[in-house]
Image 1 (cartoon, protein in one colour):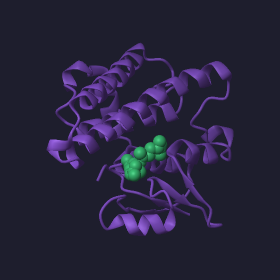
Image 2 (spheres, rainbow, N blue to C red):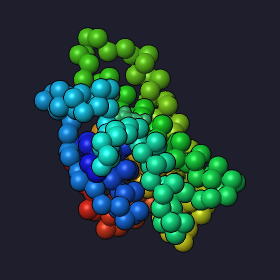
Image 3 (tube, protein in one colour):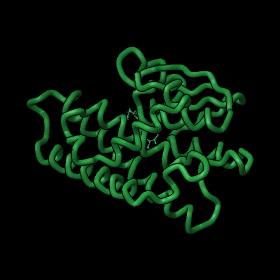
Image 4 (cartoon, rainbow, N blue to C red):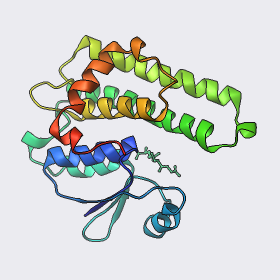
Length: 205
Ligand SMILES: N[C@@H](CCC(=O)N[C@@H](CS)C(=O)NCC(=O)O)C(=O)O
């Protein structure tokens, strides 16, 4: 089984970290979706999206949520990263949604400001993305402050992994958009997760 994509992608990174917590071995192929990586990726996945997961039977999965759903359904209860009761699941999915949208909007803003030529950039779109990013991470900071059991609980959760991965990515990709001082809970929480072995072993690069 091969996980394709650079670990600087929050979607690739959360899958890689989760697979390590699940105890599922995989080969990592650090390919970019751009430049020289694009034709190689397109030949594997017609949509050229990352992450792309190639299963041992040759099936191709994409979208980090769908990839994680596939594995979450297979692992024993003790290794699951999502809770099983409806109320707990809803509160974890709420947090994961905020984290993934924060990451998604960060990607969009990075593409808009770092890939599109400056004279073709769209100011209103940049402003909208910036507000959406602030909205997502402000809400996540409050979630961390409220310190519900999704933080770590008895074991690490997908909500915790996705929150830390999304915040680390935002700071890596767009270090000047959000002021760290406005997100003290996220900063502290992410620091504690980034010091765990499975995070250290899966660095943004
Ligand atoms: N919702 C998707 C988002 C994946 C995504 O946007 N990946 C980016 C890399 S960070 C990508 O494939 N970019 C190339 C493209 O969109 O064409 C997921 O969770 O996997």
